[in-house]
Length: 439
Image (cartoon, rainbow, N blue to C red; front, side):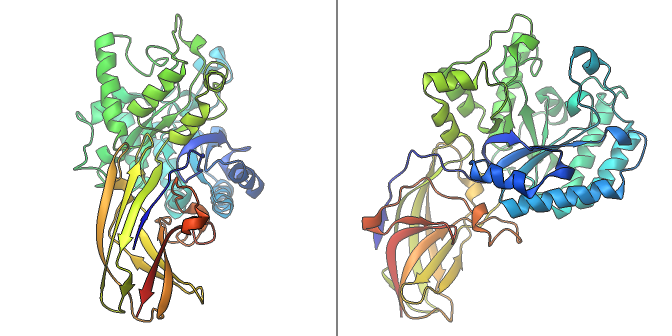
């Protein structure tokens, strides 16, 4: 049996990628209504801030920790994931920004230690953690407690990485800090190995806004190019995202606002996510005007298209069954979260579903490449005889989300009634249009 699949140009909302919007409230107040609204409107990630202003000199109260647990639970019930950032201030203007205060190093480390159990328990609905804590807006500058010195930065980095499971990432605001820690960016050979270097990414909150991206990179052109090249390489292995910002924040800025700019740099920097609400005047509005906004929306993060599949038409319970499929990633980035690739056999008469596990890791499906997998599977004992539809599923890798079809990755393939090819939203799987007769 063989099948060819047709790609679609439709936007496919998928976990851990794409445009995000801000949560309506801080994470400890995050509601199911907020998450449901986001999901309905095609957002799968939300930015969720946590204000710690009241605790600069105190331990975090149980009420805050319980609120965070409730907020994460509401995200889980809504089918979305969050990008949290913990901050001690959120200044409105230039004067207030310069006077913003954070907490002492010992207090920050104590707070992270308190947060560790909450983060560990809810890592399944954390898309990516932005480092936060230090300085104005938690952006790792203008610290009233000197936390931007190398020793403090490293201590906070280590505490944040330790507070999350080894497969989770922390994103830092400034590439030079990451370069100080790791002289060379991680490579394919070290990707996802749990090391600090393979888990430390960048969020650029002034993407495309000026030559330096408003202080993200050096004023020196040579140094800046080195930093940009490093970040491009880093973003192939760790998630890169953020937002655009007001170019007026950088005197003499020449923002890169054209479709050519975002389409080139989105791919170069393996852009996984971007704020949908800021800074729209100079960027999103022009992308819409010039006709590339929908393309940006489609290509951000991973975009997986099944190309073809073939397998033996029949199989015997307990015996080997050969199957091959080809997939291409036409998006700007790879999938960054571990998840299984499973084959599902659904009996055409009874609807009974049998799952066959594979060893395929979709995190290896790098941007712009095509992959073919040759599988030798065994139809398990107890599989009923008869004709089965064959599906491919990419469920969430977390146990408590693995059976929630909202968290499954949907391929960018068109339904084809004539070929019986279709996305099954209840299974969270794509029906290949082929049949397997189990004997």
